[in-house]
Image 1 (cartoon, rainbow, N blue to C red):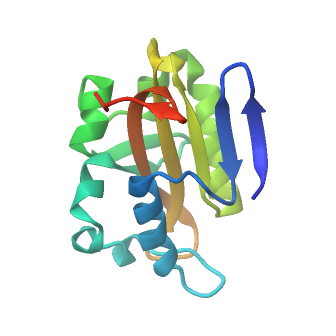
Image 2 (cartoon, rainbow, N blue to C red):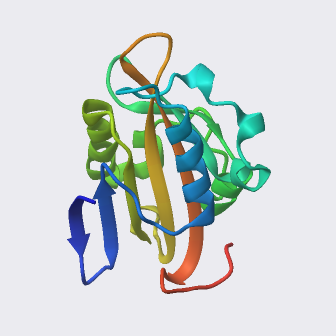
Length: 170
């Protein structure tokens, strides 16, 4: 496990290249993605079949398209994600979603593309002016009919409190 950043005052956790969240949704989505990885590679979008993902995970999924000019656009977002953000994310870019915090967050997306590895975070939603709310998110790289990373599959869960003392999701 490689911990790339950890802020003890904020209890933010970023793990790149490996995950150990203990979150049933994220664990299940990661297992689905991992089972579809060809030897030495990453899965193609066509290998990810929503029918084979546990139904409880579907509301937590986000699919990001990597844009030619840079950045990412949300192709689809599940109902739990939309509810946590107070709006539908479909069609929004990461810049439109994250505002002033986009640079730091988009670097994580770019890291996944460059390294072709998963990236997990557990942190406050301070960038969304909801720092009382925490989220866990994994980004998983996908190809799209070639070898280049063209999409990112994400799973996110949202909760109040700390990872050690979570309360009901919103």
